[in-house]
Length: 261
Image (cartoon, rainbow, N blue to C red; front, side, top):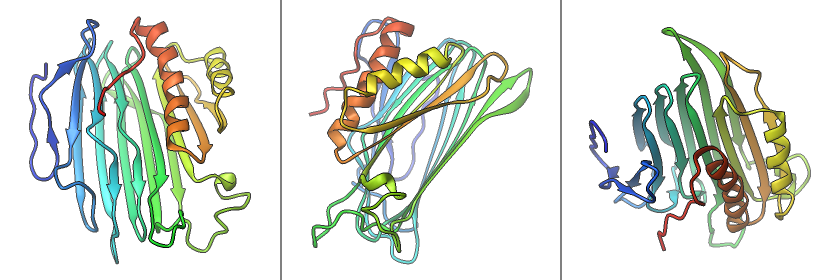
């Protein structure tokens, strides 16, 4: 249960619930407006206390509609206490025709924190049937490790997708794929063996996948898994298989089942 909860404007937070008996509380973010529009700014600030376990998800896909002459933006700040666990599992981000979107995520963890965050980006429908019709997506994630009041940079992940002026179906731009899936993991148990195992898990899916590791900082490390595909469902299954492995091995939890539909 949250010690403090507050929302204002377009975003809402539903009452907490529990998916199992692990003690992990689940909160659902809701956008009653249905979509992000030009000049919209959404700010989220989440702190997971020492020893707390949080699953944060969304009620439905995050849709970005046309943003003529401007862009929609989401700024998220996450802070994880000692021994805390945060699982971020939003529905897919859908960018529609003539949409521009910026997403800035700033994360501070402790050496004993555990973070698992997954995301899928997909192009939205357009009247002419073509997919890559949005203007630009910029997704920036910055992760720091805090020790004795001092922070050190663990990872800076910067994704820019700008279809305008590119041959979106050829090599060098999404390698001919239309959908992007990402998994970011920070935990003291992250190592090369885990990276190899997750890469092996992805081999069973129709996607092109790569895995990178960060250098260790203060006893913890980060992992970034990136997958390209032509299907939201395929990427969701792939990321779900990876998070299922982590949930079972690290937390003794069953596969995630949000039962939204």
